[in-house]
Image (tube, rainbow, N blue to C red; front, side, top):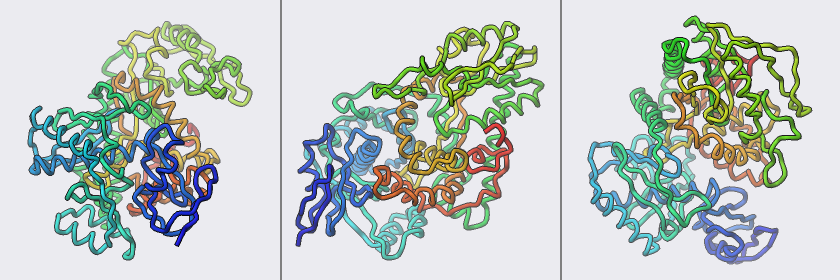
Length: 554
């Protein structure tokens, strides 16, 4: 029996039923510059080892894409875990957070590995790569999975199974004789994982891997101590609350303790924002400028408002200036390679005018502040004049706030740079993290629907471009920050579910981003929903779900 497949470029071919996506991909590998690492069947991303038993559309995901790198890193982590289990089975590992193009894994039971241990682990991994050791894809029933997890005493994973239908088949992967469950497709064998290194780092190990598009060379690992410290703080705090996994969050919600977790999470935010205001106050008249930067959907607007309130409490008058008002006029805006305007480039800001105004304001002069008209692409002057009093501090929010070119005329001692992002500590289990980029994308999907009349399709289509801008203009400067503030809330995944799910379900199967929508829906399917009524009106999360006390400023 043959099945009919609609392939890339609308090619239609017949294959024997049971042919895997891997076998089909070999007929098209020459059409791509990067290796195929994942299949897409009927719009849903799936393992290349999936056998096809019915007609449908087929597409492929290559390694040098964001989704392709998820597959690559997931498989590299599995290879590392197998090496640990074979050579040092007493070592307990948890996958923590990304550090650029590297993954930090914490040793949770205090064992210290020497450089010789790391070399032995690396050699073992490379041996499996050289052998093209297969990563075997296998289905098991929910009951079989429950039995396996009970034997392994993995309570978090057992709890997550509650959201899965009884007749649903689960995918488990085997590398040699080590079986593991991962939330997402894996590579078919280890030969794809040729370049990596293990580095001793703090109380664990960093797995360094290549950047997408530069897979033939391994960049030197660049430490991000400030960012990693913030990850650690949030992980320790969420662990203390026993709310560091989706399973634990679900249990808290089902037990009726959601209100307590919300109150504690919001109190932590308020305490940390107050501490930043105190730091500015303690510097006396030295700090005249506070620059707030962060990637999309990090909560910059609400953070700036709440910081301003705390400054007023301390007797300081915050004066906001929007960096957006200093865009160059449309005629002078830089363009991308495709000819479209590059509004996210630092060159899109009139750096000369902005620095001139900063210098004059801090010198006590009166300055006429522009207002940028995004409809006409022209800068207008509508009569707003500004002069700083002795008790005033300029508050500037914008994606380029950490770039020194933005405020080059202001000495370092007279300004404070704050970087904010949603660095989620939440994970599905010890090996399956919820990525910060996914949490921010969920926030943006909900906010764009609530306040910008954008459906999920539009938001998802724009997301890759947003991410490219962040990688180029924001992330390289994050370690330049004087302070890093984490806007994540341990309960927010449950609140965002209620709003994001119907939006994602509305993405048509015919659209390329349907695959990403289905991946996010699968992620959301594991969490118990939570209503927003318990969230205080000044919460950063209100910036996305609505009902903010600062809604006029949003």
